[in-house]
Picture: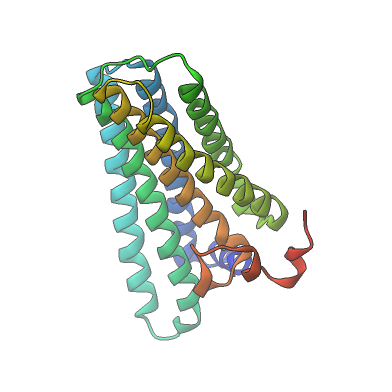
Length: 231
């Protein structure tokens, strides 16, 4: 499904602009996973950086609305009904990108009650590894989509599921730690936000390997037969 969508976005003039706008959404969202992470871990909440994050999130939201409007206009025209499944797929993808922007913004808002930096201990070290894992997955996302690379998508999704499990364990560890209240809340929220950012990256990656009705839903039993044998 994704491979066909990419082909359509490249060849059809009315939809080529949608492809460019979606690519721009991905680029901005990836930047939004980087600076908020620095603000969160280093506790450097500068007003100009917070403003930058909010401005970038606004751009993502505007691109989402623009894509939605163009998709609706496109499928409403006579003769374009064959593009409906691909337009539905695109609508699903842009929603996940929009949510990444929101959770990245939420990371910076933790500094409203926690002025950091975070403790230098095993729990935060584990959370840093989760952060790097999420950022690495996002770093490979655009190319994986561009090439409809099922092998890389599958590998990144499996890594993402492992990161999500690690996040669940970290929340419990933080809740039972000796942290003061504000530190515990900051670590738990940061962990949950990184889990959700990673989850939306996995949702986008699922479009490479899953049929349209199973986008955002992944388990090994639902994989196409040819992918189940991949390590």
